Image (cartoon, rainbow, N blue to C red; front, side, top):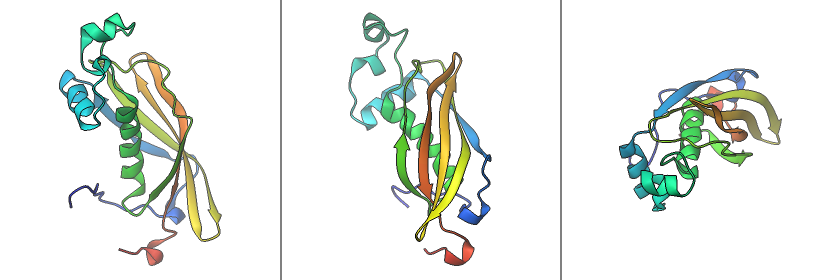
Amino acid sequence: MEGKVVTEKQKYWDEVIEGEELPSFDFPLSVYRLVMEAGANRDFNSIHHNSDYAKKSGAPEMYANNFFLQGMWEKVVRAYIGNQGVFKSLKKFRMNSFNIVGDTVITKGVVKKKWKDKNEFFVEIEMWSENSRGISVGPGKVVVTLPKNRREFKL
């Protein structure tokens, strides 16, 4: 299945519990990972893959860019909602500190609320990322829709 993330379990709106924590995920930031990510999203700014250049620009070290950090949030949410869940919005995504090479970024989330609007079933998830210095990204919100229950699941 090229280009599609496959999850083992589909989440249904009926199963969502407000206050539920999403399983967190750790992202170790190696030089290799930063270089590969910069190439993958075509962000060739040297601050993301060259220590000397990053330090000359005022950063403590080379660091992860926005696309990489947003991808971390997407991985955590996708693992929770399954393949039939749909991302509707990303709000208040803010970098508060650098996520530098050698750090491990831990991405976390918690369900804040769920609601129905017409025939769509929404879930709002508060997300944030932490590193060795505390919260580095967020908190922000991701809004998704889910199938209501197993009976409404369609392939």
